[in-house]
Structure formats: structure tokens, C-alpha cells
Image (cartoon, rainbow, N blue to C red; front, side, top):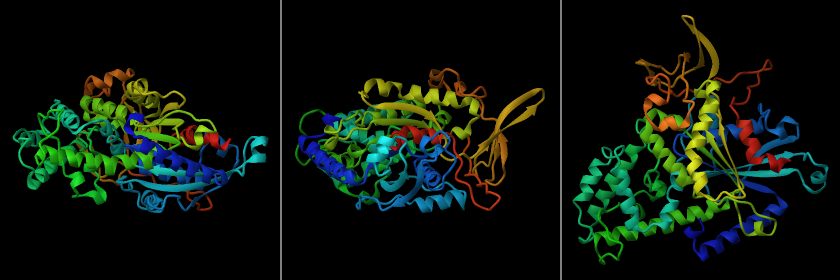
Length: 487
């Protein structure tokens, strides 16, 4: 990632880090990045993490909680005034009271959770106040896919975009844009109407790729899908052009206009995002919805692998010592979490974990992760199902029981969003490589598709207290990400 920044950028990052470290001498903090592509469960993960820590949820593999060393956890004012607050209370209400999934991440947000604890070490108890502020930074994984653009010229970006669009899995989706672009002479005089038309059609192609039935992942530029307050600005009004040369474009030409806006996008959108947020992270979790991609087939799986490779290449992994850590930040722990494990029987969890490990193998082998601890985990931040068995003739099948979302279908049966049902989700393949081969490899029954469930109705104690959100291996995720800082 060093090649994506200038000396000026590095100086600003060092100053920001020094300011953070100085403040941390008085009040120790840890910045945790939470990302993943759309619908991977970022909002749900953060809400469940905070709720279980504040309310003393069941976290048997989280050592500090299990041993009773956590005195309390509570929300505090976040340190970055220019970043929107993660709306924890609204998301919790949606999950618990309305039993609907909260709105997906559309922009960056932040939340500070402070944990008061007693160190397990007598030595640490002498020198530590036993307080850690966990600054949780939530951001769309699609924005990470923009970071490689910093190393690409406009001509290279255009060439890569056309190469992707002409893949068999995308050609139909990109048909209108490819037809419109092929009829454009990049050397014609710049025209705002043409620029807006091409940007609109190109954005339509990117959005079509995000649909459930396609589930494509590699769709930069990310802000075209989530523009926020930049919607309609020149920095988001450009598109790739065909047959570009690597030299300079004629001043006043359409290509020159598109190149200028592309460079503005990198300067005013991509670089600040990296410098102000990604370069300041200490720990990172990447949430992966592999099952949505498996539903869509091998092309979506291959595209997810491509996206994860690019995402992981954007981080700054490694370790620092006391002196270098004052001006340099490295992500020392990265967790790749396969989400929605509750959509499978526990017998398939190891297979889900193996599939996601296979998806990130290439990224880990390509990137330099020396000094960083990387792990893969199958989990569900909120468990929506329970396990049972059903008998069909002489065969006993392991099933999951839950309430499918309204509109979900299996074998022609359409669910109403109210009725609880038992579903046999099928078995994931024992060999992870087989998911790249064809839809029949995903399950023993090719007709079976994974369905989405409503959030669970929470149990209550005899005294009437509502229990914390149930989960699968959220405690293991917490132990890996922050357990060492509470030792």
C-alpha cells in the first residue's frame, strides 16, 4: 500500500497517528475496522457485539467475560466529530422490537464502546487503569475496492472495466453500456450531456450486478453505488471509454474531461478515505457472505474471490514496537468471518469455514501479512435459527428451524414472514474447490437454495428480563480481535 501514498500523505498519516497515540497514553483505545460487501452483516455484527458486551451476554469463549474480569461496558462520545455516529439504538430496536433487519451500511460511521476490566496479570494491574475504549469504524467494503484505483491511470481503469464487462457472467448486464460506449469517439469535444448519459448507464450496469440473482462483488468505483452527498457531482460523473492510448489526451476532449474527473475522484474521495480511516486502524474484521454468492453460482464465487483479493491488498498489516508505533499504525489482527452460519446445520460450519479460507488463500499468499495474525471463522452475529431433526421414511435429517423472511421461496413454496418452518439446508461440499465448478457442487440437491430468516424473538428470564442477542461464535471473534488487550 505504500505505493498508493505520497510522502505528503505519509507525513499526514504519521501526524494523525502521533496525535492518537498521545491521547491514548491517558485513555487507551483500539480502532477496530468492520467491513464487508453489501449484505454481509456489518450493521448486525456491530449491534450484536455492543449489545452482548453491555448486557453481559453469553460469551463463553471470550476469556475476559468468562473469567468475570469485565466490570462493565458502556457507550461514550466518539472521538471523531466529523464522522457520523453508528446508530446503535435504532438498529437494536429494529432487531429486538420489530424483528426486522436494520438498514445496510451506506456510508462510514463510528461508535466508541468503553470496557472497564481487571487485568489477569498482577503486573498489568499495577500499571494499567483497566479501561479500554474500543472505537468501532463501520464502512462499506465497496469503498475498499476503490483503493487499487490509486495505482491506475484513467486509461488502465477503462481497460480493466471493459475487460470485466465482457466476461460471460457480465456481458448481458453490461450490454447497454458497452453498446453506448463503443459508439463514442474519445477524442470528440467534451460534452456534459454525453458524460452524464455514459455515467448513468455505467452506474446502472454496476447496480444490476449487485442484485441477489447476480451477487457480483468487484464493481468499482464504489461511490457510484453509494454516492452520499457526492451524488450528481462532477467527481462522480465519469465512465470508462474504449480504445484509449496511454499518452496524453487532447485538451478539451471527452477523454480529457473523463480523465480529469477520474483523477478528482481519486484525490477528493479515495485518498482521504484511506488516509483518515484505513491507515488509522489497529484491528480489522472482514465479513463475507459466501452463501449469497453460492446461490448465484460459480461466476459469483469467482468474482467474490477477486473482490476479497483486492480488499485484503488494501490493508496495512504488520506489527510495531513502542517507538515505531508512535507514528506508524499497522493492523496486527485480521479476521475473515464467514457470516450467516446459522443458515446451516452445525455439521457444515467447518465446511463453510474451509470455503471462505479457500476464497482468501490467494489474497493472503499475494499480500505481505508478515507480523499480522490472520484467521478465518464461521459465525453468525445474530442466530436466527435452532437445530432439530426430522424423519423422512427411514432417514433422519438434520434441519434448522426459523422464520423465513416474507417472500423467500423453496421448491415453489413462498413464505409469509410469520410462519416458523423446518428446512433441510443441504450439505456444503467437502472439497472447497468444487464451489467453482458448478451449482450442482454447492449442495447434494442442486434445487436447494439458502434462504434468509427474520431476527429471532428473544427469550426472557423468569424475572422478565430480555436475554442478549443469541449468536454463533461471536465470542471467539471477540477473543481474537480484542482479547489480548484485556489480558
